[in-house]
Length: 343
Image 1 (cartoon, rainbow, N blue to C red):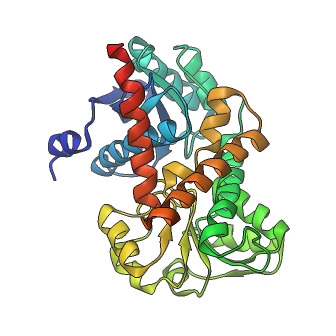
Image 2 (image 1 turned 180 degrees about the vertical axis):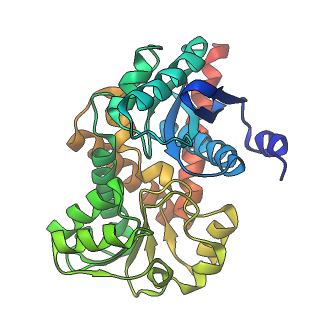
């Protein structure tokens, strides 16, 4: 699909290219919706090609719209994906220049877009952005840790309906991706006594986590889909579960911190397979909630728990897939609150 066609199909407002040669800034800023308020845009810094960056920003911004709506926040959805500069960002001055250049480039949009951290970006980076534009969030929040805890709480809420009990003691959980969010999730699950199997595209990271927690099985990424488990938790970079992988899954529930782990086609495959899927925008919102409202980790996690519980209850009551119910709930709030402009 062509980029402009994809924007129209998803309902995006705008797409802005970012470039500043001296600092190495190259990226894209997508704004999906501002119906509920300024678009919160998570900033990612990754090594990937331009087309993947653009498509990633479009998908992430739509997800942020739904996430903010479900979380009861008065924000819309955006996403900013930066390409790793050729010279890297190991030099602290180069890193400062990169993120201050980003702040300068979006300065004129400070009433429309609010930047916060995402994969590869730290609160310190957002503090650099804040030197150039006031439209920032998350400088004082460890969003990855809060998000991981929220995923854990959301998983418990979903397990109550999908597995028949909220307790995760003895429950088999397979985690794909043990970066900041996946690692935090694994730590909470381990404390409760879940049986963990983990995989990561950086095998050393998975092994280090296993040595830290103990009683954790490490498998190659290509084998994690075949692991017998009760819950499959994707916590990678996006679309880590391909449609062809779904028949291999041996779980009853998919619930993880990854943005868009499944394509629309994958969601249909999961539905046909009888696997309950709690979408990313419902379960990974704790970090965003904490950054946007100032609540602590426990309070943000409880809000995720309540949201997922409501989704699962409605899904069970009407026999609908949780991911379909979650999207309809988010869209209903957007429609209802959006209609207030006519009052």
